[in-house]
Amino acid sequence: YQRRVRGKKQFAQKLEALKKLQSIDSELDEIKKVRGALPDEVADLEDEIAGYETRIEKFNNELSELEANISDHKTQIKNSEALIKKYEEQQMNVRNNREYDAITKEIELQNLEIQISEKRIKEAYVKIDAKKEEISRTQGELDERKKDLDTKKNELEVLTQE
Image: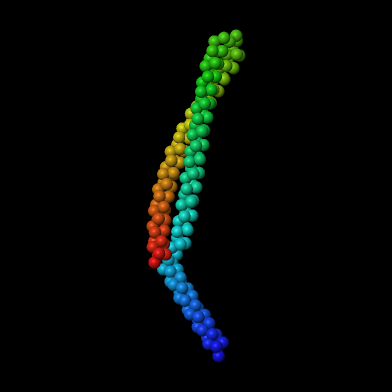
């Protein structure tokens, strides 16, 4: 008889534990229903923000490259100017027309090199302006997404605290 009573008590305890478990499970389902797609939206925004940050980093690297190219072209211009000066001095000491013509061709060549470098520098500045504009636009989008993310995180936090 005692075994039956003990068995019934254990059975009642198990039923009570199962009832509590079902209640907790129902509460969790209710929380998930209230939260809805909010966790997914937060994750999506975090991914989008990471993409914007990567894009801005890439643009900044491209800016650095363009500035290095400008520096290289400026160095090329200085080298060409030095060669022109050297050739002009040599032109004063030529012995015949063939030497004079050869030096003149070298001077013309260096002047063309200078023009090409100046053109490349102008092109690089145009690209830099475009990149800076793109960075600014992307930064604006990034800032907006960060605000959205903060809002969604706060909503999610409020919901999970309830």
